[in-house]
Amino acid sequence: MNATAAKKVYSGDASVPLANISIGMKVVMAVTGASFILFIIGHLMGNMQIFIGQEQFNAYAAFLQGLGELLWIERVLIFTFFAIHIFYGIKLYFENSGARGVSYKKFNPSQTTYTARTMIWSGLALLAFVVFHIAHFTAHVVYPEYAHLEDALGRHDAYTMVVVGFQHAWVSILYIISMGFLAFHLSHALPSLFQTIGLIHPNLRNKERVIGRLFALIIFLGYVSIPVAIMAGIVRLPKGGM
Amino acid sequence: MNLTLYVWRQKDANDKGRMEKYAAKDINEHMSFLEMLDVVNEDLAQQGIEPIAFDHDCREGICGTCSLVVNGRPHGHETGTTVCQLHMRHFKDGDSIYIEPWRAKAFPVVRDLIVDRSAFDRIMQAGGFVSVNTGSAQDANSIPISKEAADTAMDAAACIGCGACVAACPNASAMLFVSAKISQLASLPQGQAERERRARGMIAQMDAEGFGNCTNFYECEAACPKEIPVKFIAKMNREYMRALAKGK
Image (cartoon, rainbow over all chains, first blue to last red):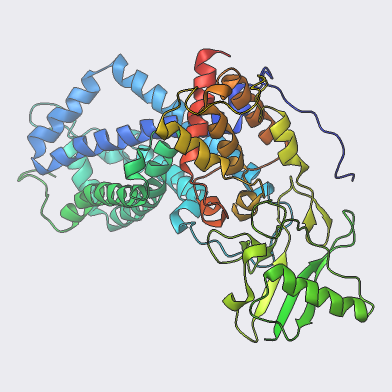
């Protein structure tokens, strides 16, 4: 190996595709990630309607189903973004872990947070959760008997499906653990997103980690409140329900 | 004071390399870290052992040549200093000190603690310059530059190109270095003509050299002897997207 071998030097007109450029990949991660953050906020706002009651929750579910093509466009978009986010996440992981070459005998990083270091693992755990979550509440593979419940107005009884679903302790525990992974992922994701697309106000520098953690905590508490309320019997089946 | 050193020894680029243990005896606390190594080397030479090879030049913290990872931190644990300005008073008698070279695939070890940083030179060749002939120094205020722009450019220009950012980054990313160079020139009127070409060229070269990608750990900022902030990485990302949007 000749360390001083002449290497090609790029000039500005080098036509390297965006998707192969480090910063291009980072921006792709940030933009797809931003769409998930919007989705997570919207999904939580929808879910919280369970606290209003069966009528409101089933009406909301019927509204979503009534969107028809719009719902499918949203599903296809979010699935495509998900696939892209996972593909580049794994590609970057391998590039980054290979860039060191020989590792240090003693390495003593001072800034790296635990959540930042484990993005790939919290991400893969979330992937597993999403597969289960869709199988459970959307495709009804896990408890198929709750797929065709109907309420008094003949609508799909999403309320009963969710309440019965979370009355299974293992489902609730799995859900709460998964929301923990989500919180881990988000606490690094949110500040990273703004850094990557270059939108960080100098006054917010150094506060961004706190903001990321706070956001992650709010999302965690919001989502976890539902299985906890169901397990505690605060949100329960209507009288005469199954 | 007496110290135990664990030093990376590697004969040449093809050698596998290993850590060796040496005793540093009667070290004066007023010595710099490099002067301590000079003393150890004299001792080694007398014993007939090949002295430890390490990079150094100005020894006053401005040239960016010295490059040692001391106890797992580039330039040692003191903030805002190069290793030549790290003094032995920051260590205690009886300490064990690990000394390793910068570690990155793009910075291959040449010998012992010396690495080949020509990857940085090639990144500079890919756009880290201004082609317009600017002549001799201008009269003051003949080119209007805002105080903010001048300050930003000056902060970025503090980069001495030592590579500590790469050595500190768990991904061996060079983005702090590249972003400082891009930001410096993008902030000034002289840098406008090649602004987009520069961003694209330097970033393409950085990737081709095999540096990793930034995942916002911010180890680089903590290790940088000139305390270059990571806001420049955000600026570089913006510069790159700007170049794309302009189609240049």
